[in-house]
Image 1 (cartoon, rainbow, N blue to C red):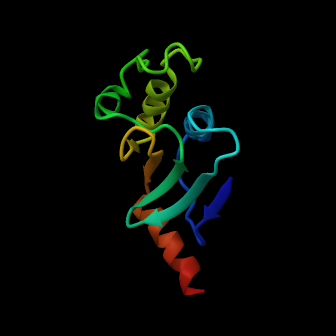
Image 2 (spheres, rainbow, N blue to C red; image 1 turned 90 degrees about the vertical axis):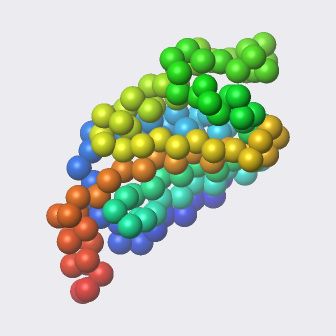
Length: 138
């Protein structure tokens, strides 16, 4: 696993337990749907008025049909039901937790076999942006 955390990130006003659980689900899925020993990349960075937590894997990726169904409660892809354990609730719950904190969850893939990118985008308030600017000016 590689980890890249941006510098001078502002503090966020979120329910840390919910965000930790949502991010944990992204990590769990990356590991579950990737070959053993493959690299998973994690990054956290500031982008305009958002902090973005991302997980990139080199796993089995998503078909367009799967991508459309991801956030539905109890959705399981037919191509994984027999080979990969799960209830289909993980991303639905993660999305609910992220949304409850004013953020968005985005999952993309270039297609089956081409890996997946999953990102939690959380808003930064004006106060938090001002705090970041103060730190950067020092």
